[in-house]
Image (cartoon, rainbow, N blue to C red):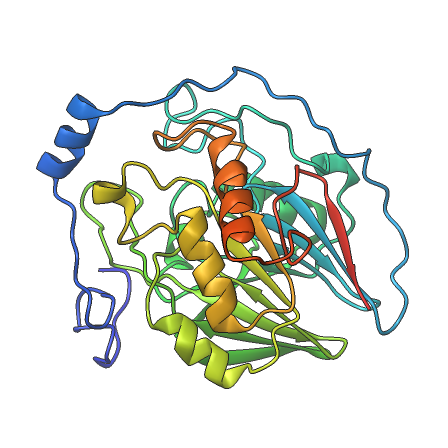
Length: 320
C-alpha cells in the first residue's frame, strides 16, 4: 500500500475510488476489448505542422501556454514556468521495447525547454508520469514536483527529486501562483497489483490574474460542476479529447470530443484547448478522428471553433 491516511469520500483506508462511481474494468474486459477491437491504424511517423518553438520573455500580466504533446503543457508567466505531465519517452510503457510508441515529436525539444520551476503530475499512468523524463528534468534543474497522494513513493529512486503529494482540494502556493489539486474521474496503476493505491486528479492554477484548468485524464462526471463552483471564471481549460474508443470500455475514464465540449460548457471556460490526442496511439480511434469530431460538435452546437481549439504539438496560446 502506497498511502496511509484517514478515510475520506474517495479513500477507504486502502484504495482510492471515484465517489459514487466505482466502475472497474477486469482482465476479462481487457481481453474482450483486444479480441473484438476494430482499431484504425495510425501513420508510423507524423510530421509537426507548428512553427519551430522559440523561447520568449513573458511580460508581467501575460501567460504563455504551449501544447508540448499528449498531456504535457508548458505554462509560463513572468516569474514561473510550469510543466504538466511531462512525457518525452519514445514509449509510454513499463518496457522500453514494447507498448504504445511515439508517432509524433514533442512541440518543444527537451533540450530547448526553459528552466522548469514546477511539474504537475495528474496520475501515475505511464503516458502521464514518465519517470525517465522526470529524472532528466531533475538532473537539469530540480523542479518542485506536485503529485497525487501515493505517488512520491513511486519516484523515490530519482535521486534528489523534490516531490510533494496533494489530496483533492489541497492548495499549494509557488510564489504568486496558486495551485489547487482538484478531482477527476479516473484510476491509477503502474503494474498488475497496485490498482488505485495512489490518487488521480486535475489542477486549477491562478496565475497573473488568470485561471487555467488542467484536466489531466478523466471521464465525464459531476466533478466539473464542483470545480466550476470554486472557479466561476476559467480563462483556459485544457481538456482531453482523445483515447476514447471503444466507448463501452473507455467511457468511465476518458472523455470523447462531445463530452469534452460538454465539460467546456459546464466549466464556463472562455477558451479550451484539446489535449491527449495525436501523439501516442492508445486506443481504437483514427488519428484524425478526435479533432474532426470536436469540429463537428462545435458546429452542431453553434460554438465558435476559436472557443475550443484542437492544434498540433508546439501550438502557442497567449493569455493577456
